[in-house]
Image (cartoon, rainbow, N blue to C red; front, side, top):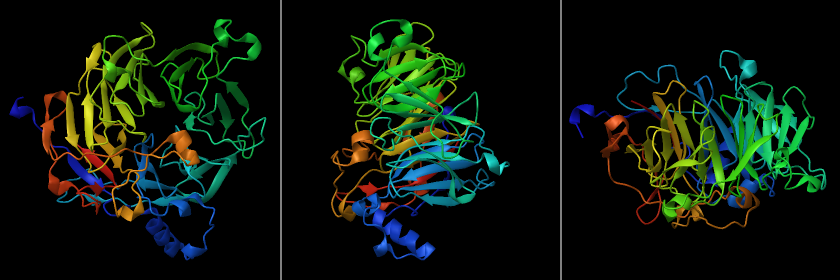
Length: 460
């Protein structure tokens, strides 16, 4: 590799010690800020039962205008980080990122979604959704401490609230959003506060028409992820490893279904996976990338062409039940692993078979739960952390599925191996150099590992 092609990703900002604590410590701090007694909180609150957990970041999402990052943490708090205007200016040390607003939720959040027209210059558009267990879907805003609106999704048989596992605003109508749940995709109008969805589309065919015509193909399982292509094709992925495709911006019929089983001859590693956690379209709308939990790769499907899996992006390092989000920019796919590395695969759709990453760099000291690219493409946001128990007294990543949201989300992890490498190959045949001095200190955890619960912004 030519030395002239090297460059160094610069750490622009980090949350530092903001979340380097247990859930109970976070709640005590939060209660002190609002003047409440932490010990008098509702004993049924889910967080109080998990007070010894590490307060790790579950996810991070960019707003469409690139000004704000929405994060979800183990303490059931949604934080909105409005990035400083001078973030890209040269600085000796990274800036400290502080949340502009925090929304403490009474129950775990299964999914979040940011309004497709989110614009900081237009406060009425700065909206995002949160799906909560046993409660209606909430519409929130960084500029409002209270609930803006709520939308109940109630089971027609049990009359209990359904907590969607995926939320997505429509590209066709910014006031409509989709909610994916057990064998169901519902559509809501944000202007209809307190009302149920105006459309319910079961992903399974009716009993009398099963196995019949094209329009009655179906998939069964929890709809864990949703994504719309530039051509208006809605993709729905399930924990049962099925993909359903629906035309007309989600309002049309089923155009196809398929299972994500790997191709023969690609090896056992290319057929691993235990439930789809993310589907993401290429910018051209032809290729669909499928991300699964407990999988070391990403499947790339040629939806508009051959209709089969084109390639397998291997060496992702994501053998964990925790959701690890990825992102696409142009022909590049960026993904974080449980080893704290960010990896890049170039040439999306240009090659078949097994494909190794073309670059990587060391971003965190723990599992990277989200990797998101700024709309402009030159700035990257990463967040990290995983479940540690007993106030970090011993290294015990929780693999149990005894909690209700684990049965649905299975956000636990099976360990993390940190990398000491600070200089490795990067995209475009460049060389990444992540200086150890640019990485903020993380809370100590057992057997030499560090619990790194942080949000970081990078540029190159």
